[in-house]
Length: 269
Image 1 (cartoon, one colour):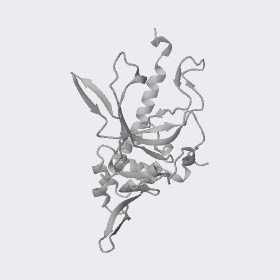
Image 2: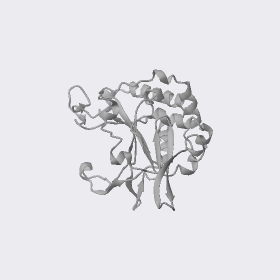
Image 3: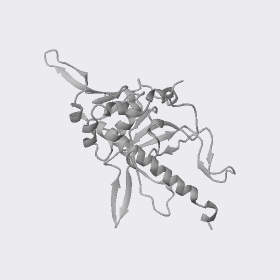
C-alpha cells in the first residue's frame, strides 16, 4: 500500500477529480481546463491547455486549482524553477529565487521519505484555511482570509500520546493527528511528502474566559477552494517565514539552545 492509499485519496472520487479551471500534476505541470463551445454543432467541452512552459499562467493564477493525488512539494519546486525571478516578484517576501537555488543544489535522487507509521513523523503536507474571530475595543473582526496556511499533518495516532513517561498529562488522543509546523524543517525532509488541499472553511464563535473551547458554536462550515496563487504563496510563505534556508536553520539551532538551557524543574517554583 502506497502513501496515497494510506491517506485514502482516490483520484477518481468526485471531490478530487472535480473539474476546476486549473489542475496541478506531477512534474510541476499546470493545466488550464478551457471551456470550448462549437456553435455549429451546439456542443461544448473542456479542453486542457498546458500553461507550464509559458507565462500565460500569470493571468490564470487567480483561478481555483486542484492538485493530483500524487503531487509532492518537489513538484511545486519543479514549477517554480522555470521562472524563479518572476515568481520572486509575484510572491513577495517568500525568497523564492533563493529557495529554488538551494533546491537545485540538493541531490534529490537520494531523498526518499520512509512513509511507514511514526507517531512523531509527518505523513503529508496540508494547505488549509484558518479563519479566526477576535474582538478588540468592542469591534469584532475576522483574520485568516488574506492568506492560506501550510503545515505538516502527523500520522493518525494508534494510541494516546502523553507528555512524559508517567503518562500524567495527555497531549494527543488516539485517532487524531498532530499538526506539525514546518518553519524549521530542512527542505530535503519535506520534498518527498504529498500535498493535500484541505478546502474546509470553518468559523467558530470567539473564545474567551469561561467558555469551554470544545463547546464553541460553529458559525460557518463550508468549502472554499484555493487559487493557484494562494496555494504557492501559502507554501512558500511558511517555508521562508524565518528567511532563507541557511537563516532559518541557524535560528532553529539558536531556539533549541535556549530551550536546552532552561532549568525546567525550577520553572514552576
